[in-house]
Image 1 (cartoon, rainbow, N blue to C red):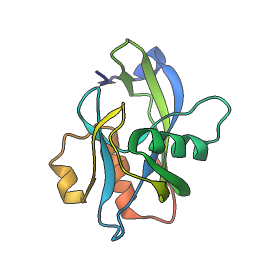
Image 2 (spheres, one colour):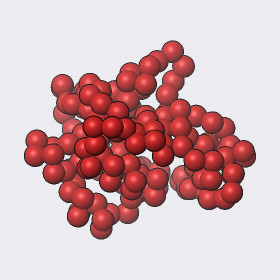
Image 3 (cartoon, rainbow, N blue to C red):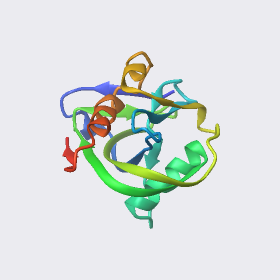
Image 4 (cartoon, helix red, strand yellow):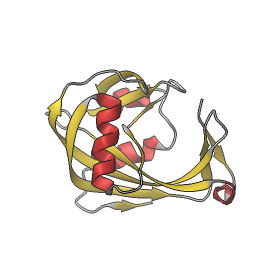
Length: 155
């Protein structure tokens, strides 16, 4: 199970990683696709760690495919998110401070499905999301995505 740990400059105790998350709107742009994680049962945007030798857009597309079964293309940057004051600790003891990029994406193929990393997938409105158990770090990113700003957020 993963958990978020907060503390002043706690990022010094973790490994720095780059990660990408994908935002997928429904056809009305009123709902966003979220996945429910297998490890902690919380909801989040599909995404994950960048692998050596890939670009951020390749990372985003790969992670969305791995977690949802959907093939996507990256359309625009929603924001870049980093803070030294929280880390994620995983059930294997690894700790990471993330530099996360969130991208709005467009579906080009595939079918929504459950994967090894997810136990549920669904589209939710902002109001519906308020009642879900969301990974804490995702809340700001989801709000920013719904704002549909032409400029990227740097947080």
